[in-house]
Every structure is written in structure tokens, then in C-alpha cells.
Amino acid sequence: MINMYEVSETNKMIEHENLDVRTITLGISLLDCVDSNLEELNRKIYDKITTIAKDLVSTGQDIEKEFGIPIVNKRISITPIALVGAAACKCPEDFVEVAKTLDRAAKEVGVNFIGGYSALVSKAMTKSDENLIRSIPQALAVTERICSSVNVGSTKTGINMDAVRLCGEIVKATAEATKENDSLGCAKLVIFCNAPDDNPFMAGAFLGVTEADAVINVGVSGPGVVKKALENVRGKGFEELCETIKKTAFKVTRVGQLVAGEASKRLGVPFGIVDLSLAPTPAIGDSVAEILEEIGLERVGAPGTTAALAMLNDQVKKGGVMASSYVGGLSGAFIPVSEDQGMIDAVNAGSLTLEKLEAMTCVCSVGLDMIAIPGKTEASTISGIIADEMAIGMVNQKTTAVRLIPVIGKDVGEIAEFGGLLGYAPIMPVNEFGCDAFISRKGRIPAPIHSFKN
Figure 1 (cartoon, rainbow, N blue to C red):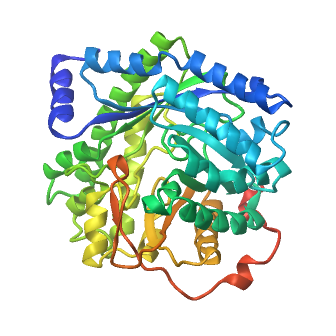
Figure 2: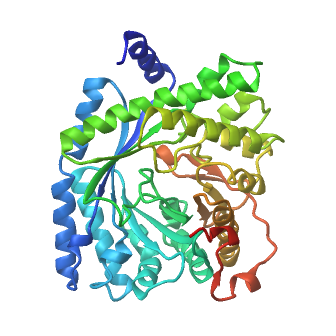
């Protein structure tokens, strides 16, 4: 039972510490929309999304009003479109038509993003997969609400280096296609290793093929709540520190569990998971970097940063799993640069580099996220960075991802403006030594020896 003290405490976290439900994401399977006729495929997709999701936004708003819990985003994830469009889409341009349909459907139901313009190619690419990947630059340039992802590796299959090479080219092409808006299209494109089927957070959300016809997944976020709690244990030992993080994560997850249950009941859609990810925003006091600095770092990037982040991530997960039987998605700490004012300040102060961020991704929830780099960066260099991050995920049996933004026309020291939750980012320097000969090799990096667990 929830007592009055817990109600009061939750209200305080919402009012003063930036606690929110970051997203209610409605997963919708489009497998039953498959058709060999492109026009019919688009009709089925539009009709299914606008039928199942018609009450999503209004339901979220009703829950906000009744419980006083901010629900920042209402979103949709769908079956990877490379699978859904395989029979009808014979070229990249056909997939772009599907993207336009998805964008229209998202606008009709009022969600801000729809994720799942995706391909799963960790071992090899079908022709449909390749066509979808090649369509991404144009698709993201002509739509507003589409988010795209490509899973190019896994612990079980290794890393598809042909896909890695192609994705480096696609990231660069997407940057060019959206250069009028500081290459904003790249902010909606994520390259994954070990992508989860139930992640409610954009831009990497899609509905895995093992999921139900429809499902509600909720993402909760409270960096400000954790930061405030840690202020009360300054100078204390690691035991008190860890207990405080766990207890706080438990409380935050309970809020997500409440909202997920209500949304599930009101929409008549099964509840899937709560994702407790400390996802920052540009707002002051809503920063993962500030948590790490509260733990004892002068600046994020200082020696000790990776250890502090590892501890934070682990305690968040431990607290979350006690609060809900179905914690899933990514659940941990995100370290995007542009969406976290503390990270931006650390880059500007010179304490945080791309190489240090890569080291931190060994222990965080995702990977190299929302990092602006010079627009002149070679596609092969982008592929090399992707390959490095995929290797971390493959060997460590964890999800890793890359969301790099080569900002066309801008260089180190300049600022890229993305707006809204995406914030702004200083352009970070990239190692300029080449890796062309490595990236141009064809084939797949094999799975690591510890993947053989059958």
C-alpha cells in the first residue's frame, strides 16, 4: 500500500526535482499488414496505427491530470519496417513512401515520434534490409516524426562489417540531406549492437518480432531526483551512497509501474516493461553528469568517471528490479552530450573527450549518444567509431549504440543547435588517422568465444 508520506515524497520529486515519466510508448505489430502491393501496404499500415493508437495521447493526458505525474512524450514503436515492407518495397524509394505513411499516421494520432524504421542485420543483409538502410537519408529528410535504427551486431552473431561500412556512409548522407538544420536527421538515427526488443526510448525504439500485437512500455527518468538524494550523503561511504541510489531508483520505478498499469488498463493493451533510464534533458538540474559530479568528480571525464558511472548504473538496476517484476528496455544511465547540460559543460571545459566517452560506454546503458562531430569527418571514420562501439557491446554482452551527428559546414569549437529535448552540442574533435583499409574488408567479425553457451 502507498502511504501519505510516499505520496508527499513523490509530489516533492515531481515539483522540485524534475521527476517525470519520459514516455509512454505503444508498441504495434505491423506483421499482419504485409502485402505485395505497395499502395495496399501503406493503407493497412496507416489504418492499423491510427486505429490502435487513436486514444494514446488523450489517455496519457488524462493520467497526467488525475495523478499529477508529468508524462513528457507519447510515442509509438513498430515492427522493423525492413521486415514489413519486404514483399512490396523493391527499391529505396518504395521504403520512403512507407516512411511518409508512418509520418502521416504519427501526426494523425498526435505522437511526437514513431520508431521502427529499422533493419536487423547483425549477421547479414537481405535485399529488403539494404534497400531500407539506403533509404534512410531521404526518409529522415522528408519526414518529421520518424526515428530509424539499424542493429549491426550481437554477442551471438558477431558484427556485420558490411553493414557497418554502409551505415557510416548512410550517417554521412543523412547529415548532408538535413544540413539546413545542423544535420538534424542524424539525431533520429541509431546504430546498435544487441538492440533490445522492448526499448521505449527514441530514437532506438522498435517492436521486436517476439512481442504481442500491441504492448505498453513506459520509460521513467529522474536524474534530478537522484542528484538531490545524493546531496544528503555527501562525505559518506560507498555503502550509504549505493543504498541511497537504490532506494531512489525504487521510488522512481514505482511511479513508472503505476502509470504503465493505468495506461494498460485504459487502452486495453497488455503492459510490457518499465524502463528506468536516467535520461537527461537540457533543463538545469536534470543531468547525469551532475550526479557523477555529486558522487565526487570535479568534472565528468576526470579519473574515476568510469568507476562512478559503473556504480551508478548497477545501483539503478538493482533498485529498479525490486520495484517492478518487468523492468526491461535499457534501464540505467544515458550519457548523451547534447541532451545533458553537465556533459556539454564538461566538453567545453576540456575534461570530456570522445575517447573518454567511449570508455564510459563500457558501463553505461547505451553508448556514444548525441555527439556532434565535424561535418568533414570521413564516412570510413564514422564506420570505424561504430565498429569500436559494436565491439564493446558484443564482447561485454550488453547493448551499445552510436548516434553521431557530423554537422555539415561546422567544425570543432562551433555549436550545433537541435532544439527541444535534443538541446545543443559543441562539435567534438575526432581522431583523424584513417581506418579505410580495415573498414573496406568484406564480411563479418565472428562472435566471441563466450557466445557459445548452448
